[in-house]
Image (tube, rainbow, N blue to C red; front, side, top):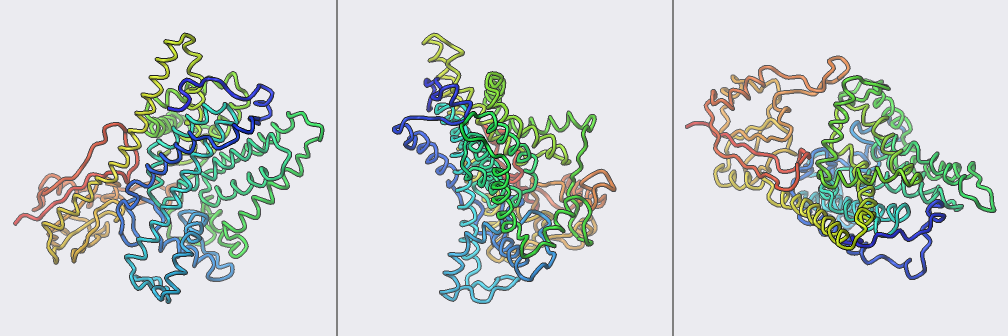
Length: 573
């Protein structure tokens, strides 16, 4: 693994203080190790990129933005002037990026006559909707791969500026092999883009703190605006970056004084222009205002969507330990305990590097305290920006590992441990791909194809994202929550019932429209709870015909959509 024995930092203390890694012209060439790591990352990200496809506008990735959804967001945003419409789930930034990626293919379909009259209903105006939606979904996933590779490159760039080339190599490798990074590259979820924009803003701020040029400040503003237009949750990560950049710039002694007012102006220009476009503020300002009001819990008009569970407090008592436990669970799952320990060692080592500590710790502490703690639950994907920063810290610790063992024999041992850890993280990334390739839903689909002929009555209670696809003349009827009762099952008499371990509570619970009125996100439906219990206890005339599952060996999976267990019940004859 790169740099296991290369333990020196290439920049002088003065250059580190200025944040500029001044190297010779030969060293300014592209690092071949970075090229290799990016190639490895690309291989991990594109392996079985067609996971769960084709599947119409649906996806096996929970909360993924389907092609039709992205096109619908664009149509509603630009369909009429200042309509006030907004997408309750996310800002429009990521769907609009997807549509921008779709444009060449859609233009080709239009020219060839395969998409001339778009409609809101299937087949959406496509002559071959399944083929078109498959290609569009793959284009969206290709964008996620590109953002994932960009994040790996940015981790390298940040590590090199703060710690040197050896740390940069390790940082890039840890990010490339973090299984959540690999997973989200396989989806059209917004996480890959969201993390990329946050990390790009961090890199631009670091460069701006040591540069008299306007480009880093423009980049900081634009990247921050794109992050906010992708997912507002990142506001706390971005909040300290301009202040840290200005403080770092003021400490840098140069003949020409630093005009921090102009720097902020350029940042505002980059951020403002980007926000006006990516959040569609120019064409639909009322929609932008309506979404902000909705996030604050005060919708401008009545809406059907449930309110987001966001509530900040300076101190939440016993919940503080719950939040820390949730964060620990997400980080230990994402990185694995050995790499998380190495990242902790890197964080401790920052006591000798005040500048690096400021850049790496302040944004993630702000993100946790101001943003993540305001949520009801800190899931793994919410912690992804912290995962990337932890990888940089682990890279710094790996580069400094030789200092732990001054003797040559000790350095060999340390190098062997680091290479073993690299092998473990790579194995975890490979296993994530294996879990996708051998997803239990594929086996469930094969079982249904063999045992459920056309005309079979199949009943489901969960979203398509968590279930196998139903094809070849077999349709599955989604049963609304009020109808999930013992008597309802007896009256409908489905031939087959299919359930998934993913989002299992959605079978028996409903989302609370306003979580502030009940203090909980989910409310149980007693009749549905009774029905599911009766089904599991064989108190209904159904028996388990097949169960499909797979257990990971090297990672503790905390991503709901990855490898759910599928259970198939059949009616007793």
